[in-house]
Length: 176
Image (tube, rainbow, N blue to C red; front, side):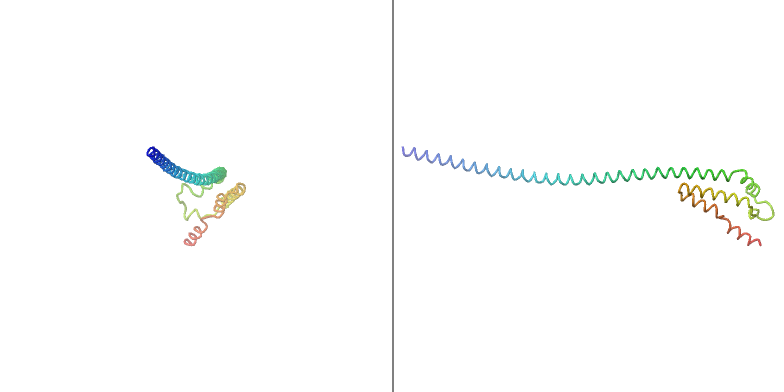
């Protein structure tokens, strides 16, 4: 009987030792799994924060870009309107220049662009041409002020300042 009791005791000790070892192994595995899950959670939280920050920056960039595009579209439309008004003013100037008063003088002084007569007919000064040139320049200046157009203003200055004055003077000096 003592042998049976001793054997039962050893069997019980082996079983309890095995249970303790198994419980320790299970606890260590659970602890490792928990640590991995905590690390994964921390990584996911960091990624979420980075993604949120990036998304907020992208949304701000998109709104800035949209505002810029809308501003440029508005500017383009206003420039298109200004250009159409400038074209209208230039067409009116062309109409004035091609009117009977001006076109008759062109035929008189520049018959078919061939020089006729004894000495450079284009050097003759005609007051009516200067008056018409002054009217055109004044019209363009007025339209430039109305439309606030730098292009028309520059054109008016060029029309008013006869670009051939120096050339005519140099040719007269050569002839005389």
